[in-house]
Image (cartoon, rainbow over all chains, first blue to last red; front, side, top):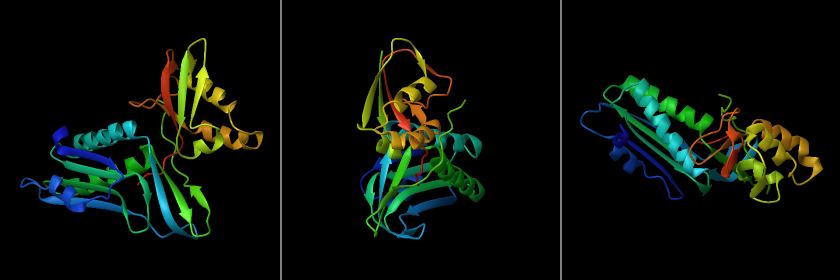
Length: 148
Length: 87
């Protein structure tokens, strides 16, 4: 399954075309793409930038795990590409891209959603927002499940 | 036994250094490591906030998240992972 999964964490801009070319195949009739961009406002404040911090070794392992779990749950033929930025981004820039292709649309939609939610709830990534008021703040997040 | 703990996200704000080194003469569980970290918080004013954040943070190696029952019995490099906000 692993050659059907691509996971990238980088401080370089995310290339949508590269992700699409990875998931496209003549066997795949459906493609679902989620793109998360930096917003210029949050919680009543004008956002100038977001700094993404990532515990990269574990994040890369978990992103692959999320992909493999989606293949097991939805369709072993899924092709999955996950790109996440680290470092400082300004509004409008892409922070995360999750692209999934499958023979049929239902599995592509469902798997894409599941992977995005897993990243938001389980992947060791943190956002620090910088505001026009010269303040900055770590965004509140979801505790990683570890009581097993 | 030496355990190095690297801080991520907002946990960094509560400690003097980006990495703290803890020394134990016996195997320790995750709770004990967090208690030892709490003693190294940089000032008393922050101790209650730090305690709350430590309680909901996970400890991990580069390969896995440690369960609450995990026992660390050898020198290790760990990361302290507060609630996450990726995407």
